[in-house]
View 1 (tube, helix red, strand yellow):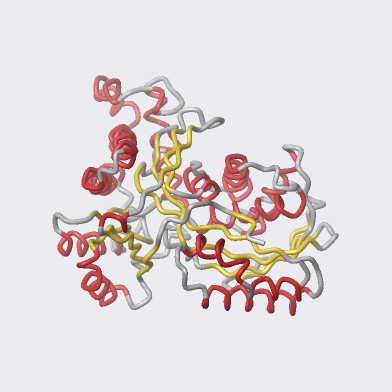
View 2: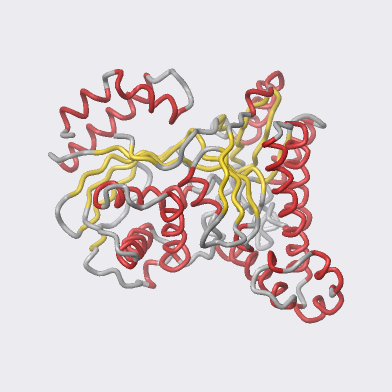
Length: 425
C-alpha cells in the first residue's frame, strides 16, 4: 500500500484483530498512534513507495538456560513487546535502516564478504543475513526501513535476535513471497550472529522469536529441531509474568557469554563428544577426577553439571505445561534459577564482581515472594533482567519494591503473543 492507503487501513477496524493479538490487549488506541507516527516519519524520511509493517517480538526464556548450544531442550515464549519496522523496497542494492535508538550505516549488498571491522555492529548482521539468504538460493535487494523498538537493548529480552529475525523477515516479505519458513529464519539469524557479528550463540533466542507462542524446542538434531506449541497463560492461574530490568548493561560482555559454551565444550571433549547432549551426567560424574585434572577449570565442570540437570528440568517443564500443572512449573523455574546462580554462574560477570544487580533483584524477589510464584535469571544473564512470576494479589507491592531500587521504568509486564515475527500489513 502507498502512504495514503496505509494510513486509511491503520485507522480502520480491519487491522484491529491482528493488533490485538500482537499486543495481547483490546485497547488499541496507543498502538494505532504508534503505527501512524512511525509511518509519518518513514514517509518524511524516504518519500513515496509501497510500505509494509513487520513486527518481531522479544522473547522470554522459561527454562533451559544455556542448554541450546549443547543440543538440549528449552522452553521459551514470544512476548507482547516488539521491534516494529515500516519498510519499502528501494530498487537498489543499498539497505537504509534507521532506528529511534541507534544509528546504522547504509549497507551495500553488492559486497557481502565478511568485514572483520564490522564485528559487533548492526551493519554486520545486515550483511551476514543477506549473504546467508543468497547462499541458500533466496533473493535480496535494497530497502528503506524505520524501526521503533520496545525490546530494550542489553536487558536480556534478546534484542539482537529480535533484530536479526526482523531483518530476515524484511527480506522474506519484500523479495521472497514469504518462502522462508520460521525455522530457516531463525537459523539464518543465528548464522549472521555467529559468523558476521562474531558472537557464539545457540538457537534458542532466534527460534523463540521466529516461531512465537509458548514453545518447547528439542535441539538434539539442530538441523531439524522438534518444536511444540502450547496454549498456556500464567494469567489463567492468577499470576503475571514480570521482567525486571536491573539496569546492568550486558552489551559489552560478549567474552563472558562466549566462555560458557567454550568451557562446556572442553568438558564435552573429555567425554569424547562434541556436545554434552551426546553423553550423560553419569559419564561426567564417573570420570570427574580425570576430567578436572585435564581441563583444569572447575567452573566449566560445574557448568556441565548445570546443563545435564537443566536439560532434564526443561523436559519436565514441558510436561508440566502439557498437564497444566502450574505449581509444578513454578517449582521447576525456581530450581532453574538456583542452578544458574550456583552452577552455571551467569548471575554476575566474573570480570566485574562489584556489579551484581541481577543478584540484588533475585534477593528482593526471594524475600518478597517467599514460597509463592517464581523468579530466575532471564536469558543469557551476567547483567540485565530477571524473570518473575508474581501472584496478582502481590503485584502492586512487588512493583513498588522493585521501582524503589531500580527506577520507575524497570518493569515490563508482558503477555505471551500467539505468533512470532510477522508481516503485519
